[in-house]
Length: 187
Picture (cartoon, rainbow, N blue to C red):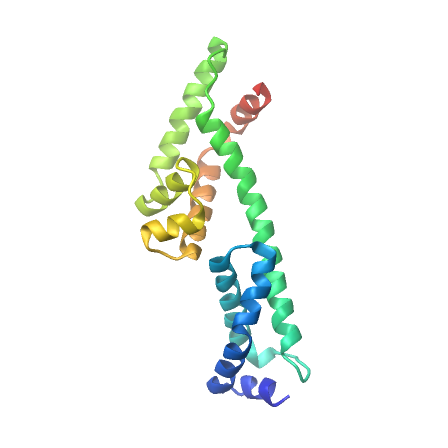
């Protein structure tokens, strides 16, 4: 109870004590869900940051431990759900961009060519770092951790830039959704 009250009263030493006590265990716990050490650490840090930001409103019993583990678990679920959505869009964009079939009819070839030009333009419109990260992921097949190591940035930065790239590409290519669906149906 003292620890929770100390956090509420903005005692940084208490917060640091709780951080040191639970950080490694929470990272291990998160890693069981998402199987990515770097991302697990980001999630645990996000959980602690959230607790610090809303420390005045915390309604905890004597033990902060269950709250910490539940927060990390929820953030892991959110991360996994976000990954599923991203992967679905990656697959559509990758198929639309990479798979040009030789046996398209003339009209379909024109549509495909137009789509390819629009995809290229949309990718070119991305900010330089965002475009570089997107291309390393989608065209070179690198994982987020590999991209982060290669570019000397955090995995979270890679994830953020990929999300921005996908939002931009979805917006830029929204008029071509029908063409993308036709291409997918051809497979």
